[in-house]
Image (cartoon, rainbow over all chains, first blue to last red; front, side):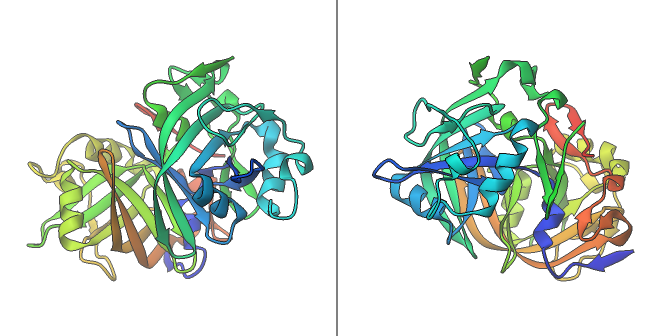
Length: 174
Length: 174
């Protein structure tokens, strides 16, 4: 039976990979938030889109310094993922609060987060306004992945990469 | 062990929901392609992004008539999903080839596809070029979902919604 969906329509496009989005202020203070609204947009050259609420501290930082890091967690980081989705880095040091350790990045100023399955370092190419968010288009400068979690270039089920279904529901793929 | 990824970097952002993207020409000929590069970008108002190769027939049609339909399949439509990902509607009638039946849409001219778990009808708000693709930003005009596949507004595992991991690998969530 087909039913019209009137609120939280975006839930129909989930599950979506939930990841840590890292950024940095111009005076060098890093920040991290949990994000799931993202997609690749071009393969060659590699370009990705991440969508961030205009009100998020992260949006201000990415507009300021034009770089961001995508940090794809495993289920070991699930608790930290929730913590970083619930508070703002405007007032708190989320790295400390969530017990995250910094991994130096290679091509960008924002740091990466230790223990993730994969990383994509990006420089902002375009910023597009859409409703309550900005869509940040980023050129991929480098990408890294933990070899033991890959199977011919694709994520293995073993990696336990969290997918956000909506609300407080996290699912895994098999 | 961290390894630098040099090709198919987009695989790191998969699995991604694979869906039928429907469009129509200005003289009323419908088309369908398989797409996985998409994301919500705003909740209120609801706006989504779908990314389509500049060379795809679908890109030409969406630019022409400014509307598209997102059709979220169940595993019953998996074979059709592969067929619609492999050929161009420039030369062939993919609905016929894949055995798809049309479901009338409510607010847009492109048709929907019968038997899907959910539908999102969109009108193009913005077109952004990025590498080899266009990112089509669409205002959601209406959204529909099959009630028996929803669990408090979220997809149930029972729906069997295919997620594209990369290459020929489809996975499901649990």
